[in-house]
Length: 433
Image 1 (cartoon, rainbow, N blue to C red):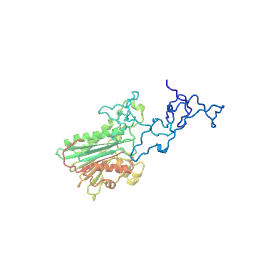
Image 2 (cartoon, rainbow, N blue to C red; image 1 turned 90 degrees about the horizontal axis):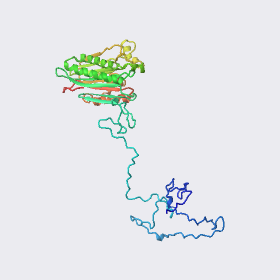
Image 3 (cartoon, helix red, strand yellow; image 1 turned 60 degrees about the vertical axis):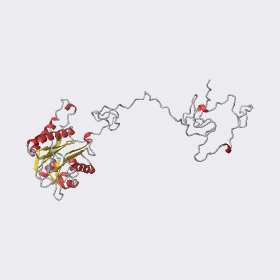
Image 4 (spheres, one colour; image 1 turned 180 degrees about the vertical axis):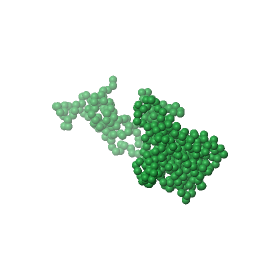
């Protein structure tokens, strides 16, 4: 029969209160079974040797074990101490010596515990080709852009975009204040009927006050690029091709306004999708620009002793005030109404009026096609030229990154997009958008 455990009211090690039947101290983990059982016939002895209740006979006590210093053999440096002569109690405090052991003896090997089948395993690895969460690296990303495992919102693909197509490049960034990037761009290279190379860049800026501005800018840039790729190899004059590309972009944005009959019932006051557009075509001898809205094209010559220039005029309230002679440019653009646009692509636009112009620069340089998210921080042509690296014509992607960084350093209040197109177009094989 197993010996009965002594009934203690407090832990001998830390004096933590105990309950009947405790085998270990709940505070320090002391092994209560190591406490020797109290003899049933040993009453409490008073300080004077007599029991408090009467003249009880004295109970002889065994003499305490005494050790002299000579009884313990010392150890020299590097020599291990001899093992103890008696068993080591595997509890924090030995009831025999009263010495506290900070660590209990550890076995040489540990038995591995089998996994608990009640513990749920981690999420299975999604099949190959599935978009995986950037946070937990395990959950699948749903159509709304959230992880089905941890719920983490995923960065949008359009938050920062970079592209290099032959000698041209573009960078687009969401900026520091907007919750999404509503800009879009498309780059392309083609060949004219005489074999001369041609490059183009189209940049669109979604109108934030309209519905689905990001969809509008993307649809417009793609439609314009497709039109240019079809028209330029057929011999269409680049300026006419640019006009037709803007018309095609307008149709693409207008088609986004087609909605189910119930859509207006839920959002009766929403505007049709809308965006601005600006583009440039560069050949070995010709530079063509086209636009609707307030996105711009700048010309920056490689020889900085020659003046840079802005090649577009904004469809905006400020530009109208300057054109009418009612304000000078500084006054107009300082007004809070300055950036209210008067021309855009969309089903609710007043009238589609594509602007196009052609130039024949007499020296090499770069063409910058950008949204107002950039030129707000370098509005004048001289200011823009100062931000452009000297080797822009041979490092277009680096230049685009530098210009986007210039806007972000200035505050990044809007989406920022810029395409860098060297002039003249280098002679090389044709590509596609």
